[in-house]
Image (cartoon, rainbow, N blue to C red; front, side, top):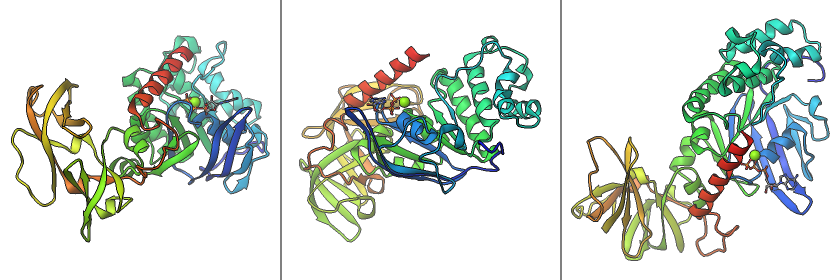
Length: 399
Ligand SMILES: Nc1ncnc2c1ncn2[C@@H]1O[C@H](COP(=O)(O)OP(=O)(O)OP(=O)(O)O)[C@@H](O)[C@H]1O
Ligand SMILES: [Mg+2]
């Protein structure tokens, strides 16, 4: 923005062969990423996977060890932060306490001697629905309102690229959901390129048109939220983005359009086109909400997988749905979500059940179950839970 002009619209962002090594620690091993202009892109991953580092590289606050960064086709790798058409909203959005909301938003415009700072600041405040509070000081606002001021302060510069690092971290769940929808409509309205960092999978899926799932400095999978959710390619994605039931076994038979895996005697069929590996030892999966519970053994039918009998070892009610944990001899415990369309659970703890699902809903992973994991315990849900707890804790401390 050194030229003092406003970007008309968003710009493409390209990261080419990025490596970032800190003294004694490699945060990003190799990152290639293209984010098209005007998109709402979410970088999703557990604590410490390199999300903030990636944003800092784009903003010019860190230098890559290797690789280059292009904004709107222009190589900005060696430009200073203020020479890049980038604005960042950090989680700790420091507003100037002695200035009014309006002056906070107009500050950057004034410093860069942009025409009409007051009118432009009002325009940005209208966008975040805070113009009526323009004369207040930050401490007279709620946390969510302050966060919106921080957003207005970034948007007013019309950066080609807006980087958001967990900008909703300090908000309560309800306000967070509301702000997610608002941010999304603001992005649609202004047409800028947004790169949003979060470790909240629901937030990433609600807001972004493209989600990249990051793990230990690498992108595991990138795509539209629905595609990532319905067809995860790795165990990490299958478990970080929602929950999955995973089964590992040998491919016992194949037809022209399906593979059938033998998992401790249970036969599980997956469409060939939804499986990344078609022979040998493979891992297949099914989402918990795609499973149906039965009190009697379901009749064998083409197009249906069924497993059982198992025993319900846990029933937990969560309002919209009930989560059942089913222990099946020889297999890992199954997780089943059932919508609460009637009152009360459909089966009690201790009862014997079968689970079935539509073959078309399963997926097969590209992970080689025989290979040593790239990172030990990566796909272990306990590890993910610990990371989430840590992230929450640091969020609380920062707030
Ligand atoms: N200046 C630094 N020196 C050494 N290591 C660093 C430095 N900054 C970050 N790291 C390490 O790089 C890794 C990635 O850090 P980063 O801040 O990008 O994580 P993150 O994905 O943003 O995590 P969170 O969700 O907790 O914010 C971490 O393991 C971190 O400890
Ligand atoms: Mg971070």
